[in-house]
Length: 246
Ligand code: SF4
Image (cartoon, rainbow, N blue to C red; front, side):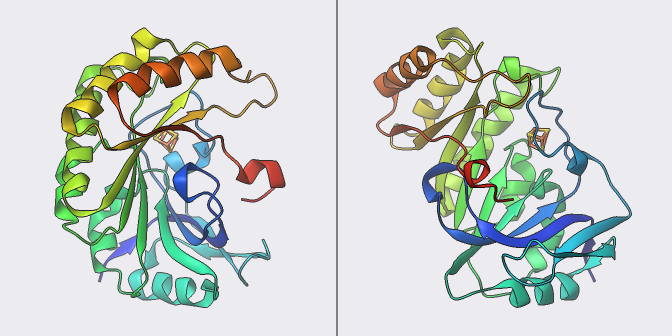
């Protein structure tokens, strides 16, 4: 039976992208192949012996459980945390596609919302058509996610093409104060070469501590640049942090 290293399972409200405000059960996996400078879940990039599971939906009261978790255990935890207004299981991380075998075997009957860094097209293909909504990131050079940027970009675009065939798919790009038209251009051109109708969400990095926010003039300039190539470009900041949600 499949098992997986999980970071946490909890019920909360989606705070990013076009589904902002939608209630979801979050299944956050451990491990990630990238190292983005802005990562807000750095603890999930590597394996740890334990994870935390919310006891009751929305309470932020957790129990600690040893990793790895079996498929049965995860399914039961998700069912327990499901509420009448909950709409999806958000598969997140870390990088959930690293756990593709586990995801394929999940049997809950609930819709699946995937948040991926898009770096594993071969694993995206293995998922077939089981993902309902795919939120696919594209990284920019200034994210410092990898030492092989162009190789990663090719993989990201391939992953987007794969999900585009079977799932509702949109692309999310985090913009930093130093992001320019030059740095975002290959990503925007790449999306347009797949399909101009694919929604692009520009997410300004959330300012905190020494991390500076993105000046409004940069946001609107990038939005107008992308708007020349793509039909649906939106700027949606992270909202869950505004109200102190997980
Ligand atoms: S892809 Fe996501 S989890 Fe991985 S390093 Fe980047 S921000 Fe963090």
